[in-house]
Image (cartoon, rainbow, N blue to C red; front, side, top):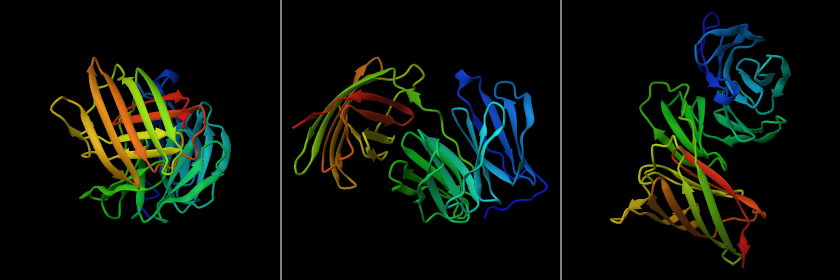
Amino acid sequence: MRAFYPFRIAAAALWTMPKTARAQLYVAEGVIPGFVGKYDATTGVAISPSFITGLNFPVGVAVLGNSLFVTNLLSHTVDEYDATTGAAINASFITVGLSHPDGLAVLGNTLFVVNNSGNTVGEYDATTGVAISPSFITGLNVPVGLAVLGNTLFVTNSGSGTVGEYDAITGAAINASFITGLIGGQEIATNPLVPFASSFAKLEITAGPPSSFQLNESFTLGMNSNGINPVTENVTLRLGTFSVTIPAGSFRQNPNGRFAFQGSINGVSLQVQIVPLGNNMFTFKAEGARADLSGLTNPDTVGLTISVNTGSTSVTAEFS
């Protein structure tokens, strides 16, 4: 378990509400009894230094809508509070499968929880608190911090001084030693995602066997994007419940400027091409075989994430 001292601030986890919701900063102070403070994220002025009190060594916080989630390291719970008023919604929101819960992260309607002593990351429904997979990621070494970027989940291992990289949909390891040589890695954060300005997709499915798909998508990067370079960045494709991440270093750039990848990932054969058209516009073409598309419905969602650039669009697949 992470070292702590009950008479001082042992951990401070910082999260913000979206700027459109008048950004606020929540600070968990790991003392006994512990508390969470609320601050103006623009000025740093205290709104309520003791916004939530009576906690048991709180270390992790995360916000989803108007819900504020807090981990209590010593009572092995995740609590849910009203992010506006601080009122308790459910002071024992999650208890199943927790062992010194630490860092938190949110992806869509999923809440990820670090189990510091259990050396795992658990996956839970962020609306109900019901366990989806209490041992979503295993084999960690005193994990502490979590961060989500697209469909990638990063976990710090304070025991080994590493950061692991995992698929946030399946829990599969992408690179368990993504960063090494740290001196007791603790909390972690990522840049916010930059949504596409626009995207459109056409999807064709062949039942097989083997099943295959062909996707043609066009997208325009968002105004705040600093561009893409698939050669050095992860590329994640989502077709309904199916997700695949092509790791950084897998794409090659041809002399004509096009990016191409051909290979097999988790048993799925892929051919992918990304073509720059100018003015931050691109086409994305992907062909795949032996992908599990059994969860696909019509219409469904196609999602694409390249580094911090991301977008999704509804598509009605054509089956043959």
